[in-house]
Length: 328
Image (cartoon, helix red, strand yellow):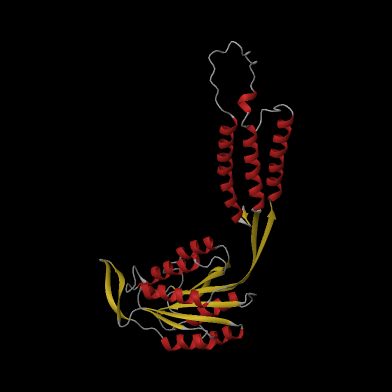
């Protein structure tokens, strides 16, 4: 509840003034008389009326309070809004080749990429998002979906060795385009993460980029890996050993893919940088939301006015009937 004219509440100061005037008046009307004996006075019959001699001022005060509330115009406020979202469909195409186990990221490139991408997904509850993975070949791990819990569970399940090793960037991108090309969303986006150069598959990366362009798909490419050498784990009969391997990212091709499709190329050299890249893409691809707000106010002064009238009528009736002469 809110009040259209809250200034009327200053009139509540009249209540203590009225009570003070009433007390003063009572003292003026009723005085004291001293007598030497009371034998000449007949004792009045016992009655409850004296106990209600102040009922009049109480009822008038309550009526005044209710009237002030009515003058302040109490209102109930109901508001709601309609929103229209121009959705964005996003496919994350992630490299899961053996080189993604390099530990220049913590704990490694693959796990770091999964964790940061999942945070990205959680921050976009209104978008349909899907997942394509690629190595020596590619397949769809999760089609476009608004059920992000299912998507996150499937994302967490991906690991090295699920498919033949290698780096088929062109096929990974083509699979992602095939999954998103028929989307009716206002914006269609692919985020492609890889740490190598295309060395497998029958579809050249730039050919896949041209296909994406034809279907209005924007591709953000992310090269993931430090500069120079990175420690790579290898399994031997004696256990896990590490060897520094040269980081070989085809930045030229990734840049051209992004430029052809109207996207952007990013280079992530550590966990923090990769997180910043996802945050940048998140800002670049915000859904447009049109919000229409509605407000409805209902006047509630009538109940207060009726309460004030009730107290005044009650005081009038009691004064002229049951408590005639007792109320002041």
